[in-house]
Image 1 (spheres, rainbow, N blue to C red):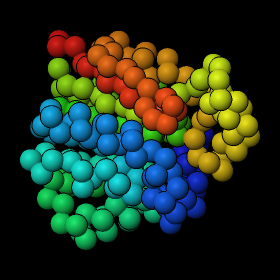
Image 2: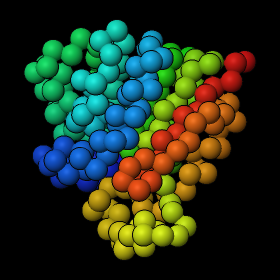
Image 3: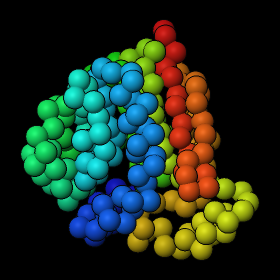
Image 4: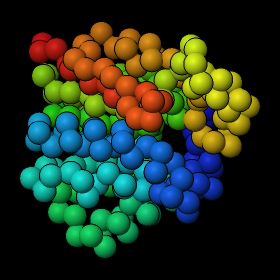
Length: 206
């Protein structure tokens, strides 16, 4: 999906995102943030959206969020101001294919329900690996293509609506596993019924 299409899609969804997709993706966000809170350190959330996850981060963390959608970022900034979230170091508009951070800037990068939305997810993963410190982790929650079962059938139905929904229903998990510097350390299904996947990749030292 092209970047302008993503921006336009999320401009439409921003007013109702929290009450719709936000509810569906709650389990994934909760699992990701719980994992990150144990790790501590500097965190980058790619595709921060309306900031639904921000208040769940431990106050001792230093969290930076990026998103390409101005409409989503407006809601995220309002949330941070309303709740006084001191763990949020900043929220910036940014193309995830060209992250404006030096190499090895973060201990953890979170990518929650975003990789099947962005254009060129392979480039996004390369950038995530670049800004991650050696020994750091990428924490991913996402819907990936199911080959069989009820989710496979629903994905086929949703496929023609990709541009409206703003995501790829047939997104392959192999797309995010191609980065040579990253090794899988955890992978499991999330409720309901394994619809989403929780995935942790770790950057090798050196």
